[in-house]
Each structure stands twice: as structure tokens, then as C-alpha cells.
Amino acid sequence: MGGKFGAPDKMIIGGKRLDGRKPDELRPITIKAGVIPSADGSAEITQGETKIVVAVYGPREVFPKHMSIADRACVECRYDMASFSTPERSRPGMSRRSTEISKIMAEALMPAIYLEKYPKTKIDIYVEVTNANAGTRCAAITAASVALADAGIEMRDMVVAVASGKVDGKLVLDMFEIEDNFGSADLPLAYMLRKGEITLLQMDGELTKEEIQELVEMNIEACKKIYAMQKKALQDKYSVEKKAMPDAGEENGN
Ligand code: ADP
Image (cartoon, rainbow, N blue to C red; front, side):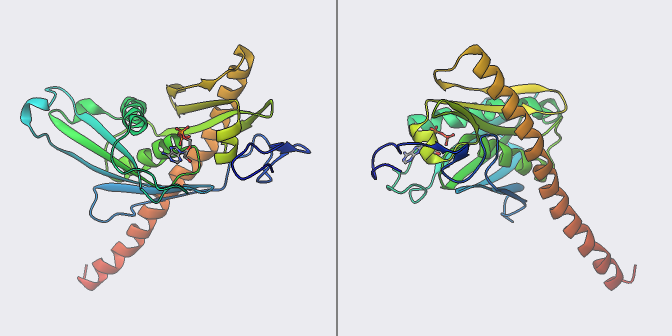
């Protein structure tokens, strides 16, 4: 690696990345549903060293009332990075970046929700990044989807998201911070598997048309793997709750 503040001399050595991964390999991911008892739904995700908690409240009444939409629910997302989430203290409060991410997150998630089933209500999605190490917008979308399902909100599909990009002239999946900082392109994508629909596609840097195509395909393949983890997170939570229920029945003499 190069100096403390400079780019590493090389980020891919002998076909492997600086953290030992192959170009198309995800970071280790864990997803857990139902981590905040006071929320209607919640989830926690760790993706490498990126760590995020999402809490969902609603569908609930809208205040002030005139902000409500007559025939569907509105969705508001608030993405926030904790001041301790980055090596240098991150300034608390909304920034241009967090405002942008909040907006694109809501837009990426809304197509998956049956909004018309919840007229005149609001669904709030609160995202807290507790450790930021690249890929936070995508990991947050993945976790928010689990939190929405955990809240019992009816959905067409889960939304899964991941980013890929270009590092040392090579296309790589799910960059960690050094790659994100010193790579030459970044392409976050959110996807609904069942519908085959992309709900977020952003790009930063320079890529050829063929490279964009390849990264989109790489992201979609990775989304399939992450989708299985989302499902397992929900199954784990609800199988624990189900196991707890018969005991309660027996105690009541049922
Ligand atoms: P994403 O987290 O979705 O990749 P960006 O590309 O904007 O979004 O950010 C890349 C990474 O840069 C973040 O995940 C985080 O590790 C780091 N970063 C972003 N904003 C800050 C900040 N204000 N202070 C320190 N690091 C930051």
C-alpha cells in the first residue's frame, strides 16, 4: 500500500484485491431483522466494515394532514451517518449527500410497496450508518427492505442493492473504502428480482457502454445472493417467534 493519505500503488495484486477478495466477490454480509423493539419494523446489516441500522414506523397518520395523499401512502426516508461512523468525526445533521441518499433510497424502495393499500398514511424509514466503509446507500436499501417487510407492510418484492465499479482498470464488485476512494468508477444498483426491475441506477466516474453492461450484470448476480440473505433474516426472526408461541398456548391450557 502507499502512504497513509495517498493511493495504494496497486489495488489488485495477482488477481486478488487488497482485502483478499476475487473481483466478483461480495464482502461478508450479515442481516438481522427485528433489532429495534420500539419500531414497527427494523433490520441491521453488516457488509464488510459497513454497519447500518434501519427502523421503519408506519403506516401511520400524517401530520400535518394536508401533506397526506388521498389514494396512497407517502414514504419518507432519512439517511444519517453517526458522527462516530467515519475515522474523522462526521459532522452531525443533514448534508447535501445525506439529502440525496435519503431521496434516492425512498425512490428505490417505493416501487416495491403496495402504497395504494395504505391511503392517507405515511411510512417513515430511518437509516443510521454506525460504521461507514463504502456501499452504504446500497446496504441501507437492502436493510430497509427487510425492515419494511418486518413492519408487515405489504410488498410486491424485496429490493436488493449493491454497488460495483472499476479499480486498477478491473471491474470489481462491492468495493470497500480504499477501492471506493481510489477507484475510477462506482455503479450502485437496486433491483427487484421477481419483477426483474431496476429501481436505482447511479454512476460516478467513466465507464464504456460494455463496462456498464458488465457491471449491471455483476450487480444483478450479487443481488440474487443478497436476496437469499434477506429472506433468511426474516425467516430466522419469525421462526423464533413461532417457536415461542406454542409454549404460551400450553401455559394458558390451550
Ligand atoms: P456510499 O456509502 O453509498 O458508497 P459515497 O460514494 O458517497 O456513498 O461514499 C463512499 C464512502 O465514503 C462512504 O461509505 C464512507 O465510507 C465515505 N464517506 C462518505 N462521506 C463521508 C464523510 N462525510 N466523512 C468520511 N467518510 C465519508
